[in-house]
Image (tube, rainbow, N blue to C red; front, side, top):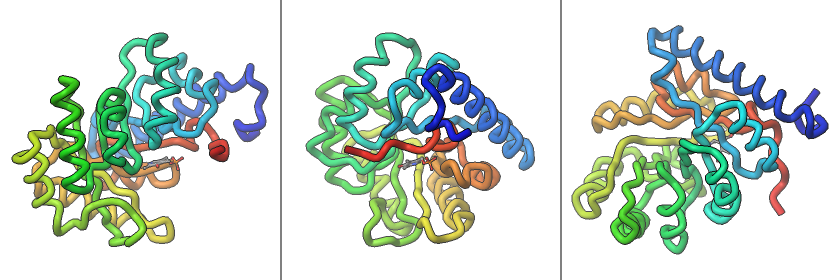
Length: 235
Ligand SMILES: *Cc1c(COP(=O)(O)O)cnc(C)c1O
């Protein structure tokens, strides 16, 4: 039965079972290419999910979560963080400069640095708040005009600006392939670029394609629906 139709009492069991099967699939995909399962981190994407499902993942022992709206995430995690220790929060959405303060206060990892202005805003807040978020560059591998991300050929230059001008801790790259294309070439491009830039974190792969992403070198997969079920429409 789809998780959305379950009564609350069964939500916890369903989320725990999904976490288990996604975890097993991650391990199998890693082993298939002679990688260690522990070298792939599962980011459970909790955006737009009802609180009870997120709580279910926490109670099942999961601690790494992804969100794409600063405001929504602030409210949710203000409630959950005091209840569970060791929570690690990843920001995976488009970031606006006027949300930099809140984002730096809340998130441990920011996947979506894509322009000098936001790098400067994050860096300024990091200094003010004495925080050191781990940062990734978002790469627009498909060259889509409506999508965030820096072009692959401009990545090295933006990386240098982030590090040298702003002193950010730059650790990796992320991408969201075009929805209507086969993801493999995009994943291969991202992994290759990360390798050439000497960056250890490669954030790619979602519910429909995380196993492919792992085979092509993902170190962080961002999985929402396959863990929590279909998202609630946003208000
Ligand atoms: C929503 C989202 C995901 C998760 O998508 P699913 O298909 O539900 O797994 C991953 N990455 C980003 C950037 C997202 O916005």
